[in-house]
Image 1 (tube, rainbow, N blue to C red):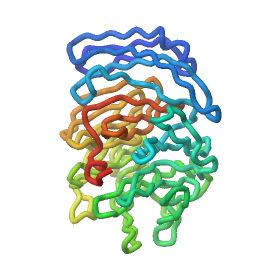
Image 2 (image 1 turned 135 degrees about the vertical axis):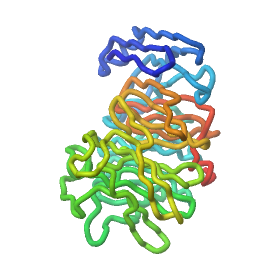
Image 3 (image 1 turned 60 degrees about the horizontal axis):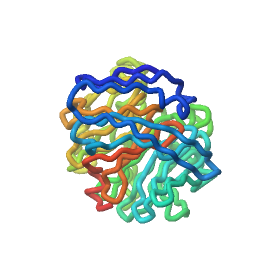
Image 4 (image 1 turned 90 degrees about the vertical axis):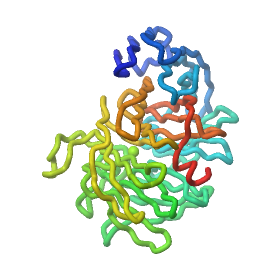
Length: 365
Ligand code: MG
């Protein structure tokens, strides 16, 4: 891999290694810092994992950038052994990060206390993204059950799995608004992509973002013009909904009038239920945006092919954290909410920041 990154930072990272041989070769990375944006930290770290996952020793490195990254912070690889890590959420009471390993059909947890990764569910029906409800229950997306569901300490309850008599496709990611409504994306990866669920039909014929009201049981499409809606999050005051499009289609394909892929879209939210004025907030490259979070100042922290990218509320790229594996999603956690956990292919990474998740601040967890 060879990458030159962070427009305007004057830095470059040149790692002459294959990702699959990451552990033994990262020591050979050359890191160059070209300006005064912050210290470059190369931090060796050893880790031992639960034997159900595997054991690895690795050296990792990072480049700290703008004021959003804690001074002197290093990217740490804290766990490995997954196939495609996705859907992280911080569970404060137990001080763990729970996340999905979708192709392995399991849910795992990383414990800050023990430093170990353990299997939470070995038959997870291809669970994907998750968040917390206002009562602290885990709300998660299930590709396999084509549903959004609650997990109360291992007891699963289906919240919603159909719209107008048609099964959902494969809910991918989910957020909860301050009024308790549950907003989720419904692309088709879980029914059309091998290893991500069970083969199935696109029963309502499209890929929508839905708003589910647990109080009334009502399910309404709120965004219908994103080709492959994937991650989503609200601005701190919930006046804007951001939705990532993980398609890579050019504009107008496959459906005329739709914008091109690999971008994060923004919608103004009216009366807590209507998404209007859809527009491109930011194009994300290389690769595409999958999961993302919004911090308490309205900055958007998104996954991309080779890094975590941070966009200001105006849509300007203001930070890039290179990650040596493909990034799928991220969440804030730790006791003060300022640790960014990153799910990236086979591993879980983290880095200390100076901010926290807007939704966690709004909801008090
Ligand atoms: Mg996703």
